[in-house]
Each structure stands twice: as structure tokens, then as C-alpha cells.
Image (tube, rainbow over all chains, first blue to last red; front, side, top):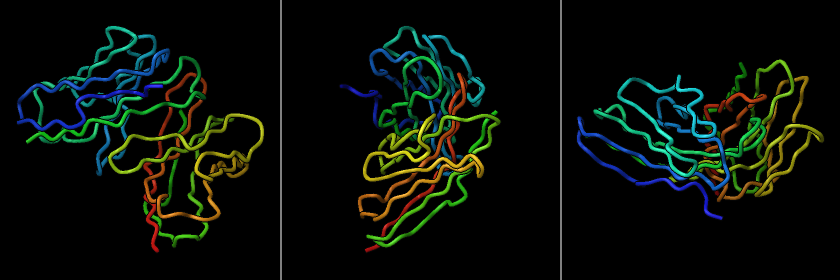
Length: 115
Length: 112
């Protein structure tokens, strides 16, 4: 079974550039989550979707961040313009629809460095 | 809303020694509880979960955890730690249809 697939694994870019992170959830999983992990703030939930619809985006830090899920097998997290403080590891996770007793399955993350 | 606390940021144990990582949660009813492990450069992997039934749950890699309602705790244990267990461990709590809340993590160092 393929797990959650994230791309790219690493991204290094200059501040001001647009960054797009991609995620393919596990087939059949209806909920998708984007997290950001840093040493200072730990693991933060940015946004999550149920059946392609954003349910809670209260964790999105500011308007520079946006996320979409155009279909059940693909999601993007975009940062425009990027800033050095956006440097972090970004994780995507998916789980079957329903109650939160279903565990989330995580991708291996995208390590983002903004110079 | 639910919350979870992992009071130990960093723990060091000797290889072969027993391990207990603490997790306390706050929620009015019985929550769903999880332990995840994160190795360097990887995502979080589920170790075990609890949402009903036997309060002692077994997980992968020889880990177990016990749900204690009276103490609002869900501590993770392993009788004999291996060097490969060095990683960061996250406790998480969920309830109903709400999002899962993760703790701040405990980094485990294993010394020979």
C-alpha cells in the first residue's frame, strides 16, 4: 500500500518566491491535514479538509498561506510570498473519514528552507 | 476542547532499561488517545491507540500504554529499550469529530 506521498522532499528558495508543496493522500482517505513542525513551536496544525472541503483553517498563520484540495487524491499548500520564518518541515497526513478515533497517516514531510 | 501535556521534553535511558513516557490529557468524556513516534527525517508513525475496551493496549515495536481515567493519563511504556528506539514520541488526543491535538513531544535518547 502506498502511504501519503509528499513532494518535494526538500525545497530551498529565496525569500519572496512562491512555494508550492504537494500531497497525495492514501486512496480512500477522506480527511487530509497539513502540519508545520519547527523546533520553536513543535507540531502545528495549519488546516484540514473533509471530503475536499476545508473544515478548519484557524492554524494558517497569515494570508500568505493558502491550501487547496481540488480532488480526493491531491492537495497543495502554497506560500506566496515566502519569508525566512516560513522555514520548517511541512507534513501532510490523511485518515479515513469519520470520528477522530481513526489514526492519521503521515507523509515523510517537505523540508523547506527560505533564504 | 481537548488538550494534551507531555511534561518531559527530553529523556535519556540506558539500553536495556525500562522506559515510561508520560502523557496527560484534558477532556470531559473518554477521549481517543494515540502515541506516535518520529524518527529523524521521517513523518510520524502510529505506535498504538486507545478508544474503548481494555485499558492496557499493545502496540508495535514492543510498546504498550495504559489508559487511567482517574489520572487522566495515557503513559507509554517499554520494558527494555533498544538503541533503535531513540526518536521523538508524541501523544495525541481526539474526541468525536474534532481534530486531533498533539502534545509537544518527548525526545528519547538511548545510551549504550
